[in-house]
Length: 125
Image (spheres, rainbow, N blue to C red):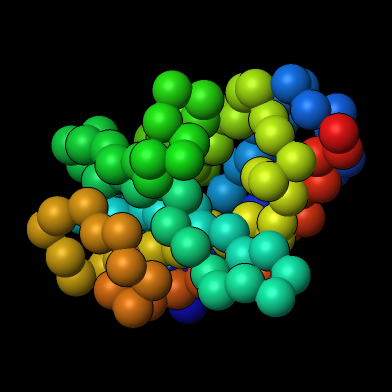
């Protein structure tokens, strides 16, 4: 059974940084795509960043390009989201997700099969 456990959220001032982690277990993830999504109160869940575990190919939402970096550590089965220059509008619950079937990096939540429980990120102004 696939399990995704996020950590690293918290409260930070605008301009600060956080690194989110997503520890994956229960499968061999070398053919998976891994994504980060976020959902702010009253808003729909939106794509943030994604990476193919095997190739390392990445995609980012325009709103985070140049500020966020997604990466993975094969030995630790962990995906990271380094978030720099944080803004109040980055405040949301951040979710890690795994796509077990696609060969490309997807930005649509519907392509992802497994989800973590989420971690809260709050950016104060």
